[in-house]
Image (cartoon, rainbow, N blue to C red; front, side, top):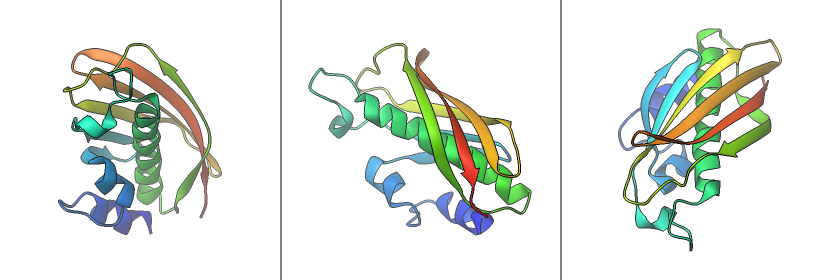
Length: 138
């Protein structure tokens, strides 16, 4: 199941992940246990303080980590994943008019739980990092 989904979500104009479509997320790179997502800037991502909302950054990081976990599962013939817990740390504001990228990697795999880390950058600036645990659903 993850393999077919990952193939579909990587296609231009994909329709299998409505959140990607809504936010404008792009799958930039994917390999077993690794994922890079790109979030092109759009004004709707900016909060009242004039910077990209922290929740948007957290969502970007969560999606990158989930797809890194899915890519590892697909390579190992396992199923989907669900976030168990996630910790996000913010270092700098993500300024408007700059695209964001998130780089995620599985740091420890297991039969039931995967441990994943990610960082989000805006240009050359590291704006946030996250770590999460994902449950393997099947």
